[in-house]
Image (cartoon, rainbow, N blue to C red; front, side):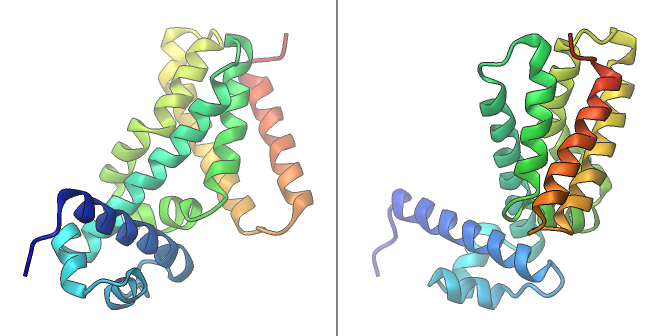
Length: 192
């Protein structure tokens, strides 16, 4: 039987990853089934393991992709921002990106437990938290406070995202969450 081309293999891996993201978001890691992910992806279980080796490594790939998606949303939202508005624009983009799609369940609920705290922090540090650090720096925060304020804001924003994710269809909750985020950001970087 002929081997799949590199393009076909990449497409199969992408399809498995997208299916797994939806499955982990809907079912949670514990209830997720590699057999079901394979079936929905129209591949064999062996193909899933060929591309991702194990269920934990498949979840890690999904988490890394979700972190990239959230970070990309922050970058897009701040592309035309001034240094005075980048922190605010990026923070609001984070809140929206992490509470839509697979991100909240994968990154905030299952991620720390499945990946382990250290790996979860590493992924966050390379994505959304790095963008937050850039925004805090651009807001003019003193270098000595850059680390602590980034950590404090990151933790507060993750908790706010969990609160909002528990209310997915509540437009008032989304509005209230963004208002609360503005109040928090005003303490760090008051509007000019």
